[in-house]
Image (tube, one colour):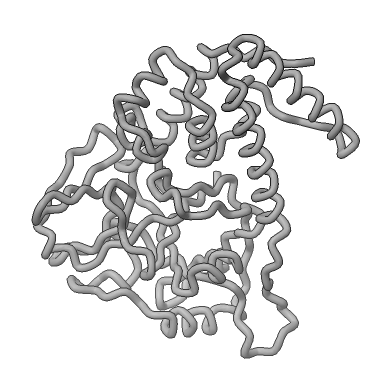
Length: 327
């Protein structure tokens, strides 16, 4: 049976997604991630369902399901034998929309094409042939671990203790992994993995390919956690992780979330980034805006003030590539 599209409900779901991912003040940032102007987005959220390409971009940016966005219902099928019913249902929905607005036929055709591309991409990610760590492999083999180097505020690991701390290199990471790979540990699968909506070129991760490794004992070097993911290391061999401390980036990034960074992926204007500021202990995670010779560090949480620094005070800044939530 075809589902009737309630435009008001679709708009309400879009607003819910926007507030969840960029906060109540995040219309402009959300619009930028969709490739449209804030005024255009405001028009859609007010009283008009967006065109197909915007709906697609919303799903790509937030991880929402297209079926849910349009109907409010989860797309659940008992088994592969229901594929024919799925196709029939989709055709009925398309016919209903076309009957309501004949000019939408071309847009709906593009929508179907995009939906098919979504299925292909998800299938490719799920079936991606990546190497995994074999615990029976020779002693000189390393598991696909990247270290969690501490937090983005006080109490972080020794890497950031110096005022002008430099980024660790791959060699240092390899030495860390070698020291700890024989330690006893437990693993935990994440609940959710998302990309920063202002980083549209970052491909999503299959959450089943990522896990948190927690060592049984804290070691003298301060490292007690690793992220295990061949997918991440295949894309960014120099990647490392940080745990977020505090709620200044909520709701986009919550306290205790783990963020993935790479020295090969510099910060992007308007996106979440981790920065090392000269003469300040630790590192900080904020949305960055550059204006002339200054850089603005903007909290997603409206309860925090924006801070401004001279650009030459920033020792390095890296983009938040993925955010991992465990609970």
